[in-house]
Image (cartoon, rainbow, N blue to C red; front, side, top):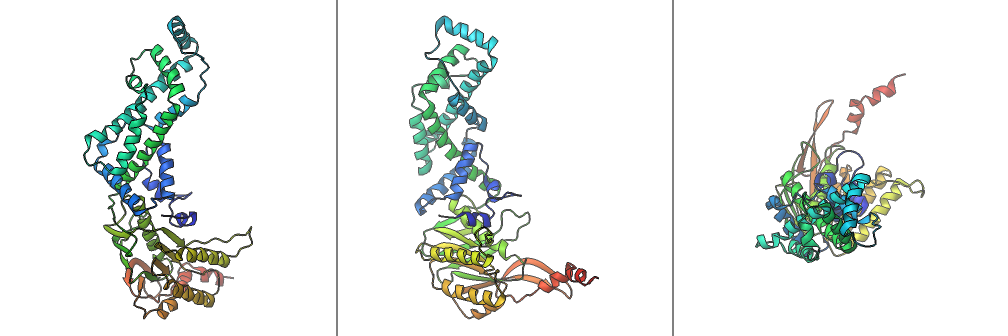
Length: 439
């Protein structure tokens, strides 16, 4: 799956303020794991088979949380970085009388170096012990997932280093002179081997984080399907960042792959589309999704047209920015592989007549792209009415409860087309018109 920065921003995967989807799933124990998880979100598995393997791994960690080694922490890996990057000026390993004198002088005259050696050797031992615990899963589990098995076998090969048995024996009682000798040899022989192990561990940390998030949020593993026939069937799908979310049921298929969404501003259209996008994204990471059930085709990518921004430096207007984003969408839809396309209130940067004509033309073009799943929201209910007789289009709207001088949103999704118009009421309720009338 390929998703650009605009899509990730529109879906609030990363935000500079408040909560984000990434912060919700980032239950990694190390910065290295966090970096791998971030790259995984930006570049989900590229094939259906790879996605299935990833989901199998995350299922495994959901079902076996007690088999994750707790001995390795973020401090462990940070210390190992410092250990292998620190200067070691000795040209030969310390031995005999020189080692005894060196140990005594280090403890008295250079306490920082003395404790650094003890501390780093201890962390190196902890890291190798944790990796050894991981590798033991190969012998203790009959049905270990294929992707996890390959990763652990790579770790197993790295642990065959000749210094590993000696380092695994290090504990609090290990003499300083022995630690000095081990540190000297480890710096010269194990740097690249440990770095490769740290990479493997970071991948496992990222996978385990998605499993922990799935379990902590009580999310459901989706039923993954090949790209075709198209399907997006969700029951009880909701937005994971809302404290009291409203759930939705939706069903796309190859016969009805376009949904036109209507309803008043603030009624819930954007939140609904974000819920669809986040459900699809999380499913393609291999983890659970915020829904009672989700059956989804393997998608090539998610494309959003939600919060377009103009570019003053380039002299681009808001409308031209909208057109450019729509052009990118059209280019992506020319590909045969299916995408999920989420379009929110297109062509806000022009007048109502232009917006109607442009939106209608875009919908007519979208109907020529049956290989993709598409949602288009609009407050121009005339557009929806124009296509209302089409049997290959789904129509849904968000309910607005209207009274004489007020309105209320239930955020309830119903089949059909809305003709609610509440802009004037909002101006009245917020007192804007009264303020303008004051002299």
